[in-house]
Length: 400
Ligand code: C2E
Ligand code: MG
Ligand code: MG
Image 1 (cartoon, rainbow, N blue to C red):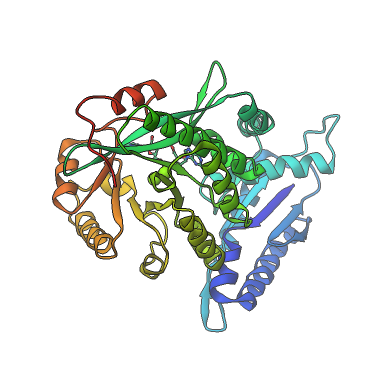
Image 2: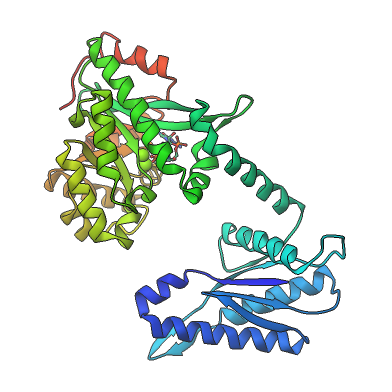
């Protein structure tokens, strides 16, 4: 069983129009048919940009790999449509009949689907055969997906607070709250569960939970006479799919008594591309509540200047991939310089992520960086360690 899923099909439709999308589907279908019919098999379109193919008889693993490679090869040949050169790409998952007791069409499609998913994760444009490793990976994801909805009510989602520093004065400016999943024996990092939470939609509850817990923490510190620090939390793109985000945030602000102007909501620029209208609407409603908005991981996506000009963000966070090679690369430094100028020119504050060395700190500070976040100043800290930092004598400069 071969499952063939086109890569970035939506982008073809969005960028070149639906007739180009249709042409890509027809071309891929024809090419698959050539390859499969030659071998006595059949191809069907499952819907959307997904195809399935079967070749009867029990071929070897090598046979299946050869077919996978042939399909990838053929699919990726460029073709002309209406004067545009299109180069399709697909990811393919392959599952072979083991002739076991539960060896039926449904199981095979499922296993091929897992393998296809893995092919996408491997970076698209390739094929994978289902194997024990993929099986274990999928099983682990399923286990986490099943447990995650209960993690929040069980108090297993815990927070770490990473300091943000005013680069000019060295004073503590605030924290970014980052989620961890405490499974007793295992402390899971966001890269192991955020995507799973996004797939199931649990992310909405999780993000609100993190916002509420960190708002409580900040309020408690302020009540005990802490400086007016800021508290940033992350919002997944999925929170922008419905229009109840501002209400939910307003309720939590009220419930916790946190000063809105000290709370910063971070989201990544990727969400601007698909839903510009609704996102800008939501953002201005959020800002009416008094909270601040930050554009996270700036520089990793499209980083369109026109977005920056039009969206009401208060803060731009430059991604750490920029900083990583700022000591070596003139180009990076040049881009950094310009982004810093632009941010300042537009009246936005500039947070530099991922500062790990003193040299990086000096460079970004000399080139217009205002606020720094990175291992040089502190890793994401346990609540009690963050608290110690808050009430340390020399960290009393306040944030605006
Ligand atoms: P982010 O919002 O860009 O958070 C910064 C990440 O960079 C954190 O990873 C932090 O530990 C890491 N980092 C900070 N300084 C340095 C440094 O100097 N060097 C290096 N190598 N890394 C540094 P973390 O905590 O693993 O979080 C990863 C991502 O997961 C976050 O990226 C954010 O997108 C997401 N995330 C974390 N918590 C939440 C949450 O509550 N909700 C949502 N939706 N996403 C979250
Ligand atoms: Mg962030
Ligand atoms: Mg970031």
